[in-house]
Amino acid sequence: MRKWQKWSSVAATAVMGVGLLAGCGSQSTSNSSTNASAQNLGTASNPVNLTVGIASSGPAETTLVNNQVKAFEKQYPNIHVTVKPFSGNELQDLQAELAAHTAPDIFYVDSSIAQQLESSGAIAPLDNYMKQDNFQTSAYETSLMKAFQWQGKQYGIPKDENSLALESNMTLLNKAGIQTPPKTWSEFETDAAKLKAKGIAPLAFPIDVARYYPFVLNFGGSYYDAASNKVTFTNSANDAGLNFFLKNEREGYLVNPSNLGGTWAGVPFAQGKVAMVAEGAWLIPSMQQTAPNMKYTITDFPTQNGKASNMVYTVAYEMAASSKNPAAAAKLLFFLTGNQAEQMTAKSGLAIPSYVPDQSVFLKSNPSYQAFVDGVKNGTAYQFGPSGNNFVNAINAATQAGVLKNLSPSAVLSQAQSTFQSQNQQ
Image (cartoon, rainbow, N blue to C red):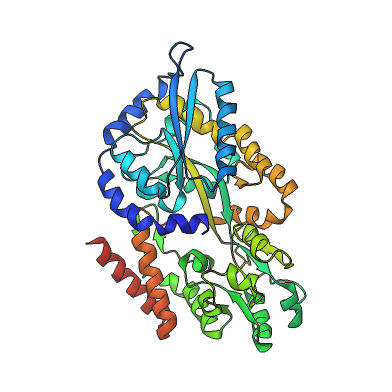
């Protein structure tokens, strides 16, 4: 299962867990801020001991983090670090440990649930430590840094990134007389009509806000106002973008992967059942395993109305407000997201490093990932506030009903707003 899906699938549990955390971190947060200048970095006779919690994808990632930690310990010999991979359900583990003030000093946080944790008070803001260490935010794309901000404070530093691109089976496109993948969604509609006329499914595209939200943004809409933490489904500016999605669903240009026999779009694409998909870089290793001989191209996610919107998926390191050694923990956090560690990530090929100066190292060995790097520059993080899980459930259920019942965009959005409000009052 893809990493962003894995986190999303446990978000429902996160909502329950965050309730347990509410208020528990306020005292610790204050202490962390007060201690920002303490600079307890240990001594040879009294070293500082830290723990870093990771949601590892496998042995290769665990080895990478262990090697990064060894490099940190070489630079800070009086700080000892233990790497702790979370068990099968890392989010449940983390929530219980945050509530008990026994969480690792720093740990992975996916952007999709970041604001749920940050608003609970169990996460330490990093602003004072960033100022103290002269941390350079300009080395990261703005969309990534914003993904870990809440109410004007920075809570996390991204360690990797991903976005959507357009993957095309050129053999199928050529059968319809198409020589190059579409660069705009207008061109896509023209190409989709040609493919459909040849009996070829144009684009596997789930009925999911995680995929179609760029359409809403391209037409000037927005489902969520982060500044006021307000859900805005019923803003009339949202109708045009949703209408584009619904129209292409009804035309058969966008095809739900389940209608092609797949649990996600990568399955029918690997089986040669559809000409195109719009997925993140997680498609590449999947294709290497399931369709190693298939030739396909990866191009930038199409633009619309002159705009290049995209969805950004990223994971950060964040720090527990309960850390007993916050200054040392901040040093570790900045090291693991900084130049030396990110260059190790780039050379490993396991993820796209978020530290921009190191991306050229990654792309030199992995040039096919260029479109996913491009997408982050104009992307919006996949997150919709502290009630993000209720948000996603409400809009996806309403959109799926809209497709099945041929509802208008305004009817879909009104239903989503009503469902979200009802869920949040429970």
